[in-house]
Image 1 (tube, helix red, strand yellow):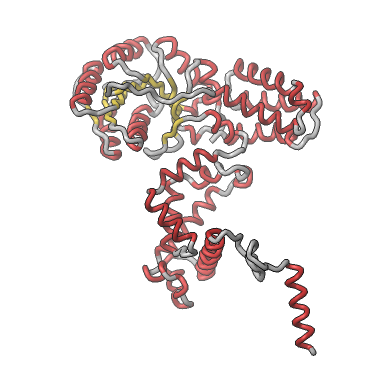
Image 2 (image 1 turned 90 degrees about the horizontal axis):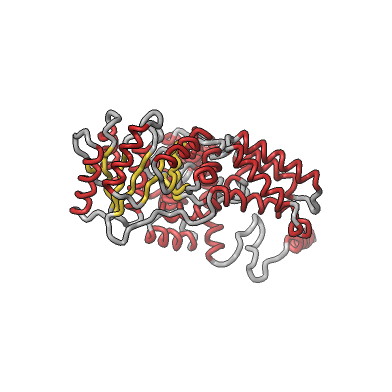
Length: 464
């Protein structure tokens, strides 16, 4: 996500980070690189011009010059300006005190509108709401069937009828939602290959029929500046409240995300971060700015972790791990939790400081995790629960069953043993010991030099 833009911006700011003092030449050079990075990312020209001007003005101010770390201050300024550019205020969805709340999705064909409707329904269902989907896209062949299939997948009802009047279909869907006491209704409307008067007229009529509290424009992030042009045209014809960016995971440039708020004045409310139906997130400008600048995204990482594990399961696993009872069943549960959080590369990039170290490791890491799972699943239930029973012959059998080598099985066994020791030490409030050394923090733990001296004394006594 935004990999190209992220690399270029981090490179532009890299020279400033460690500087104890900034001169005009260094700032000007960084501003040129930032401007080029944003233009190459397909960010709107006027947006780039204003952004660079704001950063330069703040970077040459007295507060930065007097700072103990002026380079870091400039990075902080860029982070704040990126956040403001994408919308620094709250941009959540609005909900009516008298349900159902109607949410209308609009956009061109191919933007991912129907899939976004299902993703949003699942997101709201996980938040404890009772959503329903209304199929009002009567133009595209199989649009209704697609929505119904998605509805069955996420266990959300879809209100659809074979008719040619989208306005009537939307109104009837809203009426059914009231009867069935649904608190949110998501209306999937028709799109066109391009913006035309017929499309806008139909959208206007559907909007008047359901009176949505949220009108969301769905745009494809990978189309860059074209997505911003579409948003601007929709804003002039049919006012919307916010934007849903789809295919954000495949967007290496970031032009749409960085331009749409500044051009339309409307915030990005949601972003699709993958093809799976559960990969839709609320858009947080400050977190996205941190990701772009390689600062990680700890809050989103925590939210994903919490969503990936049940509370009672998490507490039991924590208790067992802190007692050092880290079996291969626990190992497998942890692995599955990690997989539910999304692609490994994306998850690890949210950890501050790891972004640049992970280049080119996505395929390797995914294969390695799959190999770990294969080895564990080749074990018997007793071997997973009591790893120390795995002797030489068992290791050969496990390796053959998982399509791996005995060496790889041995590595996994050793990794589990070390992890169990480390977790037990953490549970007792002590840091794990290095080989041949007492746990750090333990009472009377000798220093390495003292340990070496005692060994040499024992050798001299033995000689005597």
